[in-house]
Structure formats: structure tokens, C-alpha cells
Length: 454
Image (cartoon, rainbow, N blue to C red; front, side, top):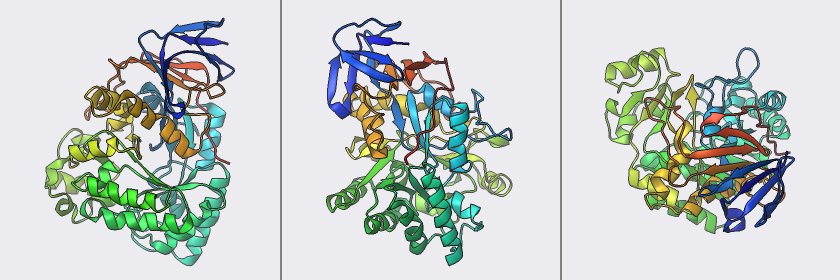
């Protein structure tokens, strides 16, 4: 079916275009960008609206696979559906060393059943580490285990994963040897590495150096994960200069950040090991429980200890980041948007359903970013980072993944108490030239395909 999107204001940062042009879509691609109005089977009038490439989320945590071998698909629980409602058409999961399921098999499931968005994955180091029999996150792997990890990572990368993600904070037993031997698998395959580094706040510089020195030694592109929740405690200005120094000396390194001032992780994570209150200069009450009988409550010492002991998997939100630091990160030209979206049974942080519209509501309309800059951080930057020439652009020949929104109305509605609420102001989302979402209603939640880098 030929579709004409007319009268919209096209913004395509990859091609440095801001213009009133019409798009003709056919067979899953943009076939013409024109001032004319060619004949089409379906016509979308985008008068007063922005037409942009579908948003690309370079950092999120994918849906679970159920006992039936299918992806979570419940409207109230599926994070991919949250992604779609906020304009995301392609998402990169498997972040922070974590996979929900074997990555190669996960991509096969997406191919078989479809998903709400196009799905790409990183191979999670911690997932692979455990699959090779090393279940103690605090201890070093043996030479035999490291060899087994490298072999399994080779399999996952050859199946289409875009690279390796590390959650060094969550697997503190990893040492430089393990980092080097596993990351080296990416070199001949031209993949990249991403990391939630070992430490944050005052220790962020040493933690950043540990990761980036390995990337530099191996000459691998490096993605520094969620910089706002790593250096957002008064270190951001200096840390951005630290990253810039590596770039100016030849390392291909970029960062992602979400537009919130609180982070999220499980109550049992190493983030909350002894010393966390001293690191963040806070008390127990900065933590909000997202699940279970204490959902919506701030921690006390008693609640914290009970949850850590009985429900270490429960997600929390921790209100310790500095607003000025997060804002500074998102203004940096080397920082793209990444939601770090994660949900457990529909519960979690509102970034999973609100990050992209929030960037426009809180940063563009409040003058912190231009509309063009915001779209660039959501489209061309992450697509180029992943090496996806068909994504992140509206040029003729590009994949017809498109978001159409009202720049004056787009806004997040997700809250810490209701983290899955859909945003407003997004009129249409197209995946492969078909309407996937219209005004908050999912029309077809199976248009997404597996995206592989082979």
C-alpha cells in the first residue's frame, strides 16, 4: 500500500534537513521525498505536525520471555509497547550486562512472532558469565571460564548481536583480564562495547578509565551508559571533559542519558552494598520501592533490610541525581538519548514510557535544547552509532519507520507511581510503512522485526 504523508514539517538531522516536504512510502521504505502530491492509497495530512525518523533507543532492557516461549505482550506489562507509544521504532536491549533470555534465541523469537518495535540486542557479559557456570558476581573468573565466555560470546555476536554490554557495577568480580579477553571477541567482528561502569559519584573517573582504557587498547568503539546516573552527583562538567579528552586522542566513545533526576535498579543490586549512603550523602528515604507490599513507599532501615533479604529482585527508584548535571549531559553534542527503560511486571521507572516525549516537553519547550537537536539525539545519533543506515533518516530508500507528533503537545505522562502511562501529542508511529500506533492506540503490535549486525 502506498502512503503519502503530506504537509508536515520534516526534520532529518542526518541529512541536515528542516523543510516542508511530503513523503511517499511503499514496500516498507521511503520511495520519494517531494514537494508534489503523488497518488497514494492512503493519505495522512500532517499539517502543523513534525515528521521525524522513528526514534531509536540505544539503551533499554527488553521484555521477558514467558513459559510459552513468547515475548511478554500484556499492554500493561510489555516494555516494547511502552516504547512504541513514545515514538520508538527500534530499540537496543541487552544492556548493563543483562539479557532476559539467550540473545540469539530471543532474536529468533522476534523474527517468528514480531514485536511492537524493531529489536536489536547486545550480548550481556553477566548473562554469559552465569551461563558459563560462574554465578558468584563478587569473585574472579578462572582462565577456563574466561575461555568459555569468549566462545559463547562469539556465538552470540555471530548470530547478530551488536556487541557486548558490561555491568561492571553489578559484577564487581570482573578484572581487567576478563574485560580484555571478552571484549577482544568484538574486534574482528567490528562490534562495539557498552558499559555500566564499576562506580559512580566521586569514583566515576577511575571507573571510566578502567572501561575506556580497554576500549582504547583494543581500538573498539565504546558506549558509556546512562552518564546522568553515573556522573550526575556534581561531577558532570569535569567528566564530560574527561570523555572529550579520550575522543580528542582517537577513541570512538559516545554517551547516552535519560532525562530524569532519579535512577532505578533492583534493591538487591550491588549499588546498595555497604557504603552506598556515604557515597550519595543520603539516608534510606531517598529510595522508593516500586513493587510488592511497599510499592510507592520510601525506605526506612527496616524496609530496606527486609526487601534486600526477601525480595532482592524488586525494582527501586533512588532520588539522588543533580538536576543541573543531567541537563548539562543532555546538552552535550556527544550525548544521545537512551531511556534505560526497565520494567518488572509493569512496574519500574517512568523513563520506560516517558523518556522520549519528556525530552521535548521538558528540554525543548523549556529552551534547554532546540527541536532539531532533540530529534538528532533520538534518531541519527543512535542509528549512526549502531551502524544502521536505513534507520534514523527520512531520505529516499530509508526504512519507513516514522513518528509524527505535535511539538506543542508532545509530553510524558508516566509517573513514579504509574510508570506505564502513555504520552500525549504523538499522532502516528509507522514501522516498515504500516501504522503501528495512532494517537496512543496500538494498531499493530507485531510489526517490529529482529535487527541483526552480521
